[in-house]
Length: 124
Image (tube, rainbow, N blue to C red; front, side, top):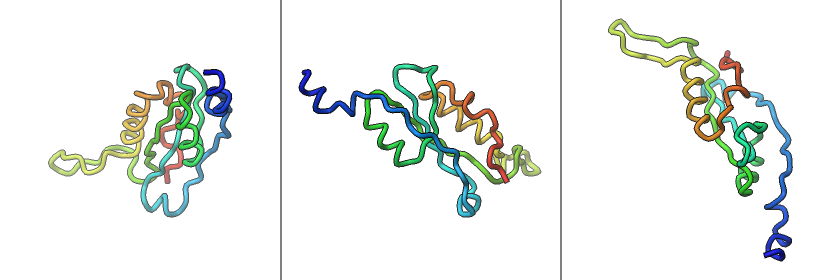
């Protein structure tokens, strides 16, 4: 067993990732959302949350000591829900959309809403 661990020491080592702050492009604004990638050590649900790029995200998920989640973050559109004259929802709105994304992501990364308190971040 020791030899197995020694051969694969990188898989059993916790390296702190370099975090990023996304920089939405014109194409992202045209699409209306960005994909954001978050990782956290798997054995500490109150531990640090790291926002990383997609390559780093995929690399860290190969390590059993890390969990991660991709989040779709809305950056364009109306802030509030828009209804038609009959009360049918035409657009959920940025605030409700991002709250829903946080709610889904929090099933895996419990305190993600503490990491992303500004649900209007990057909105234009």
